[in-house]
Each structure stands twice: as C-alpha cells, then as structure tokens.
Image (cartoon, rainbow, N blue to C red; front, side, top):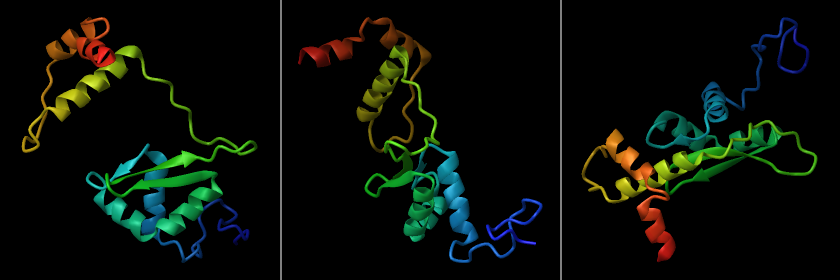
Length: 147
C-alpha cells in the first residue's frame, strides 16, 4: 500500500514512482549528489544523461536547496548549496587546504602547464615535491609575488 509519497508501508520505493524522471536520470542525480563533481571525460554516460535531463535534475536539486552548476566549455558539473538566510545546509563544509597541500597543488598545476600537450602523463617524483615544499615559501611563489 502506498502512502501517497512514493513509498510503501515498508519504506520501499513504490513501483509507481514518477515516470517523468527515468531511472537513468535518477542514477545521474545520485552520482552528482555523492561526488564533489562529475566530468565529461571521466563520467561520459552520466554527463550525457545530465545534459539530457538538465532541467529535471535542476528541479530535483532545487528541492534540496542546491543549484546545478555546469561548465560546458571545461566539461564539469557540480552542485552548490543555496545560501539564503533560513535554508538548511546539507552539504558538508570543506576544511581549507593546509599550506603544504595548497603549495603542492600550485606545483602540480605548474608542472602540467609546462608539459607537452601531446604527452599523456606528467610524472612528478617525491624528491621534486619534497624539494618544492622545502623552500619557504617555494621559490616560484616568491618570484610570482615579486613580479
């Protein structure tokens, strides 16, 4: 017996769930909710479903006080908390990165920026990371600040 909210007395999803939101779109929504972001290259099937049901997924996220952000040029999608005075927060607030983690990300971005686009991998050794982090602040950051 259904309770009128799409669930049965046992709490299971009723077989007469809304047909306007197909299983694939629901699965894409779950992937979006359980991951910080999705990309076109790594999640092609989810990306295609997201594009096909973008407005429906936007509506479902809005019901949860979330917005859908899609950068079509870079092929990335993520959800964002609606920040209004009385809205409940459902997304965890990430802690800021540590100093070393921030510098490591800068170092990796620099290495990737200087790599040949035809190369498939950018390899960074632990020694390179240690050397970069041992500078206080790292030389490339000091030069950037002075420029």
